[in-house]
Amino acid sequence: MSRLCKIVPERCIACGLCALYAPEIFDYDDNGIVLFAQEPEANQQFIPAKDQEAVIEAYKQCPVRAILLEK
Image (cartoon, rainbow, N blue to C red; front, side):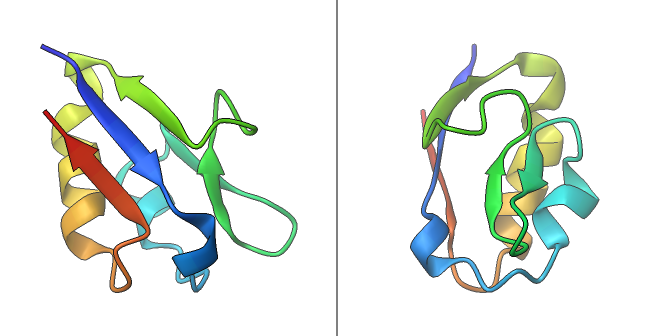
């Protein structure tokens, strides 16, 4: 089952933890603000099952809750 992941770039403080834990999913713009690696313009995407564990860890580690998960 895939999960919906949303990002809130306005909350991002460019700490780098999301890309550290889930580099296949998260990347950064020129200012270090989170975006989706495969869909930079999107603010939400479904996460494939193979990447869910990494995204959950990135979600847990985000100090400002710029990453949101829905089932």
